[in-house]
Amino acid sequence: MGHRDMIWSRHQPAQLLAWGIRFFLAAALTATQTPGDYAPFALGCVAACGPGAGGIAALLGAGVGAVLFLDFSGALPFLAAAILIFTTAAAFQGLKLLEGPLFHPLAGAGLFLAVSGIYVLQSLSPLRNLAPCLAATALVGISAWYYQPLLQAGGERPEPDSLLFLAGSILLALVDVELAGVSVGRSLLCLLLAYTAYQRGAMTGVAAGLGAGLAAALSGIGSAKGTGIAGEAGTGLLCEDPSKFGKGMILQVIPGTQGLYGLVVWFFAVFRMGLLDGTAFDMTVQEGLRYFVACLPMALGGLFSAIAQGRVAAGSINLLAKKPDDWSKGMVLCITVEFYAILSLLASMLMIINISG
Image 1 (cartoon, rainbow, N blue to C red):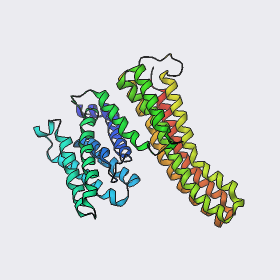
Image 2: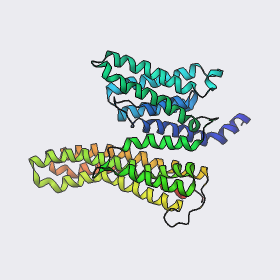
Image 3: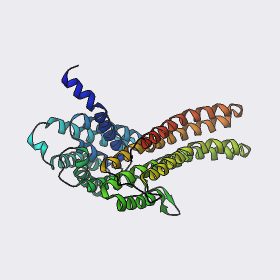
Image 4: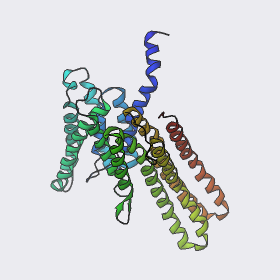
């Protein structure tokens, strides 16, 4: 084995983890949308990653996020802007111009404005659509500016500001989850982040608290959406045959388990950090980031599996309406999706257990 191969084998796990983080961040940030159905934070992530493998990972993540969170009319200009941002960075790779801190934010904002501006000018009300487009353009540049210290080496601004901005941009996707008019997920995350920052310092607190909070919040969002999808199908069934309420309710409840799994990971992570008994150890920045990464499998796995399971449950409810004797087959189909939520739970738990205190 040559010297270069030895170096690659030594750094390969860390490199793959870095690419995975960029992929999942770009996908998750696509869920944070502004008026006009724009996703500027995801494009800022693509711009901040720059050229190379990290940029490709972010571009692929943005593509997955567009499929999951955007409709066709919004996904088309979003993907066009993302591809242009990456190819422009790749075209200027190696030039001194690319080394400046302003290149990626300005290029990302300019290319987004060029693409979105065409759609605004062709719309029926260009003046009304201009303000959301300009606001999203500014957010593309600002987010790329703040994400650069996290996603690229050699950032000049302090990383706590970048982590706080990243946390805020992700939390914007949780605004619609409300209880009695209050956003439960965002409120709990803000309280947790504030307390963790007070105990650990801003950067470490944001990283660890954000990871634990996302595990609970995103899994809860997935369960809420999954049970909602199944519930809509269940109401149609009950209109025709109210006697099938019990079986229909069981199918609706199944996508709600991911929310419980996320809460388990949140509690376990907070317990391991030492936030419950007051005997917390002094976490380093690396340990805080490890907690953040360890909670990601449950956060993202719970979100996507719950939504998919809700669709399967809705189909099973339709099966119950037409063929009541095959109800158990629909249950088996739902449990098949549950298997991957359990894998996400195990992955996060094992990673948290192996974080040394």
